[in-house]
Image 1 (cartoon, rainbow over the protein chains, first blue to last red):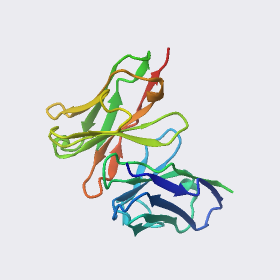
Image 2: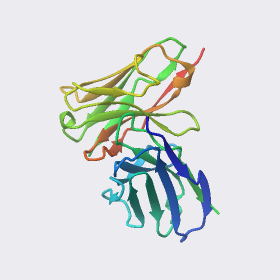
Image 3: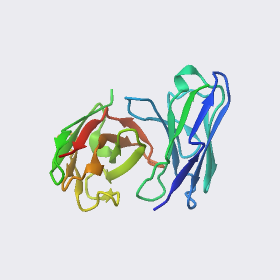
Image 4: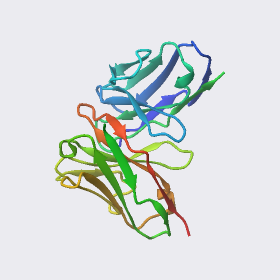
Length: 107
Length: 119
């Protein structure tokens, strides 16, 4: 199975900050990488698919990049509604494993 | 409007069984691959199972293989997860979700149904 790691596991940031979350796969997954946002008590929300494509309706401050084994989710200017947990997921081969998550909270 | 509504969760003893359902509406259910994803209390997301659009192909996480069965009824627009030989570690909120194609992103999720395995 492909293992996914994320760093950091948590971070504290202020509104307006630029935030970067890194996701790494244990083997090359091309661009079969998606990013989700999760808030307590709510279902996950798709942000980025295929490593860099912005899902319809998602604000343009969210961006994704990378290929192979190393990927990045960037929030260009953190907004109050962005405080949440973020997960990457590889869909190169089943099982489609998720990363352990990165919790973004208020500094 | 796309909607996915899970049901069937509840409290069950170890070794018991449950069948989860996911009722889909607002889209042509038979055209989409569908998934189950779970989240144990306070933990991260875990991919459980996948089924293709006509139900002829399925995949499972190793942790549930041989115990869980995913299926669908396209005439009823409903996805199922039959869970047998349940273990304490299967306790989680179970979500169904829709796959929209290249890189299998899950664009719509249900609200989740809680399964608690406890004696």
